[in-house]
Image (cartoon, rainbow, N blue to C red; front, side, top):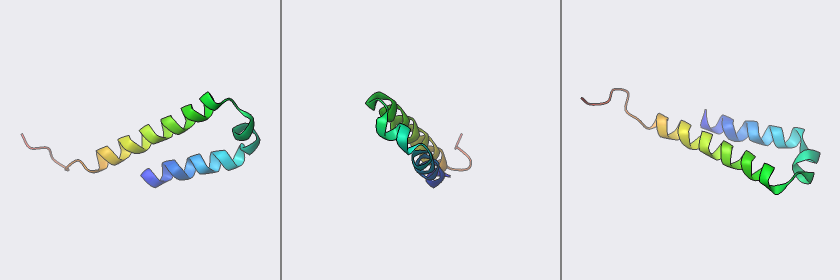
Length: 54
């Protein structure tokens, strides 16, 4: 699933290449930041144990 985030971002960039090259840097930073936080959340949840002790 985590690899899917990077794959979707890559496909989005290829699909909207003109937008990606001509847009404001804040929009690119927002795209990169949101995809990295999504990637981090998926990885963080995937390393949790199936049953938490308690």
